Amino acid sequence: MERVTVEQAWLCYPAPRPRAVVRLLCFPYAGAPADVFSALAYRLPGHIEVAAVCPPGRAGRPGEPAPRSVPELVAGLVPSLPAHMHGPYRRAAFYGQGLGAQVAFETARELRRRALPGPSRLLVAGCRAPSWPPVEHAVPDHLFAASILALTRRGSVRTDDRGLLADLTAQSTYRYRPGRRLSVPVHAFHANHDLSTDFDQLSAWAEHTERAFSLTRIDADHSFLRTHLPFLTQAMAATLT
Image (cartoon, rainbow, N blue to C red; front, top):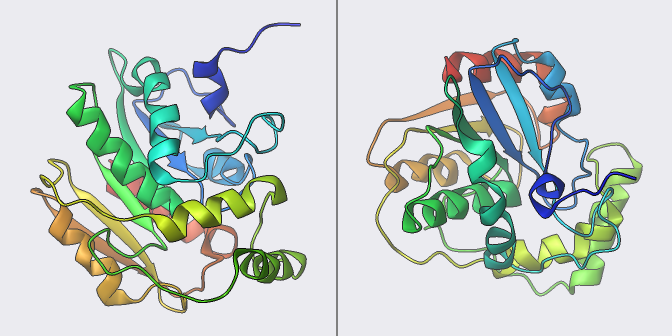
């Protein structure tokens, strides 16, 4: 059996495209399975290749402990990225949804701190800006996880149970530390009927970049990655061109 290195384990390619000029690293929402970006990878035009981030403790890496904080996720991922970020005819961009947006943002900051190649653009969805006050709730983690699993059974969201609780812990304990703004454009996708994030919270991502900020509205709820894939891929392709 071929041995999989740590660098290979952190990223998978649902639809490899060696001649693509843009590599889009996709960071999953809390509890998302490793293949959640597969349909997106096949639907995007041929010049864009998707590399899906695959954290430990999920399908494909079930025997590894799942990170329980955003800094832990970033620390595990960053050493694997240099080989995947840029080639002679390629530029990289990040797309993060929910928890994935937090991780993508902090990963971009950490790459800059280490003087390593970073993304040419950051795309985010389903996540309030880092500087926005976090949501405080008194619901125990196991009950919150149970509510997400109930949505899963109804088909509203897709999750991998093994990483869900760890991801919810990471998302709820994330705290932004002020620092220099990103030097790349940021684009946000706002699902009008997503009750977890409103327009003002997403628009506040503009405060975290020195470059241009833009926003696309989607007439959908939090499951837009599944229900509005054609619209999303068209908007992504336009943003990444």
